[in-house]
Amino acid sequence: MTKYRLLFLGCLIALTSAITKATPPERIAVAGGSITEIIYRLGEQNRIIGVDSTSIFPEEAKEFPSLGYVRNIAVEGVLSLNPDLLLGEEDTGPIKAVEQIASVGVKTDIIEKDNTLPALQEKIMHIASLLEVKEKGTALLEDIQIDLDALSYAKQHLPDSVKKSPPKVLFFLTLENGSPIASGSGTPAHTVVEEAGAINLLADYDGWIKLSPESALELDPDVIIVMNRRQDVFKQIDDLPHFKYLKAVKNKAVYIIDGIYLLGFGPRTPQAIVELGTMIHKDFPLPVGYKFRYPRDDLASMAER
Image 1 (cartoon, rainbow, N blue to C red):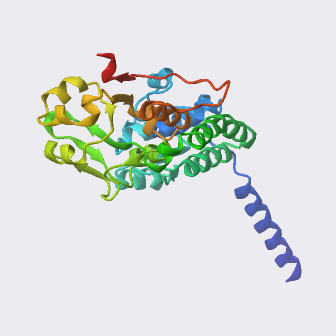
Image 2 (image 1 turned 30 degrees about the vertical axis):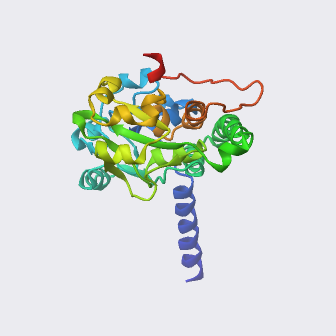
């Protein structure tokens, strides 16, 4: 009996070791633009076989077969690519689709996100560990630390008057159809506004909120940020009643910034927050020698009109 018990234990140990040392994924279907960016920054894009429609940076990522929209991925499209891993962001769905993909033996890894900078750092190292390239993950963390240090430096060196009374911001997801949708708490927009040293005027509300022009007038923000959705934002502002009376509009403190760049919580987001700080604050002192290193897309301000 002892001999068979030892044989069984030996087989169990070997099996456990094989599971523990499973080969890293080589055929990855990605659902989430930030994940695609991270894999590219890790230099492991050769493992990608398909991406969702939010994976638009870098530009060459658009050349991969499409899985559909991140919240509505196509099961047949994913399985036709014969992936060994579906790697997705928290909103990958629908849930039944993810479960169906997993049921045929495809490993699925859905990364929870809480729209914070520490969570971004954890996401980078999780993906690097999954791909067994931890050294590259550490190098990427060191790279974005340059932006995090610049952000910390700038906020520390803001004038005392600004620290005591930070600019008040309204961040709009869209102004389409005369129905502004603005950011409350619990959104990536709320995080970036606060990280940039400002106050989100709708912090007492949760999620994205439909805001009437009258309510916007009552809030009277110092700065307005609008996510660029390929619309003529400035014309939309002109067409909204009461907006012309807003302090931000009168002072031309209205800015457009690319949503994926700023709110994607990928490797470029720390730089994007630094840039947001330069928009919100008249003086946002950056360290000597600091430079923006990543492409800055679709940026505009009302002052440029």
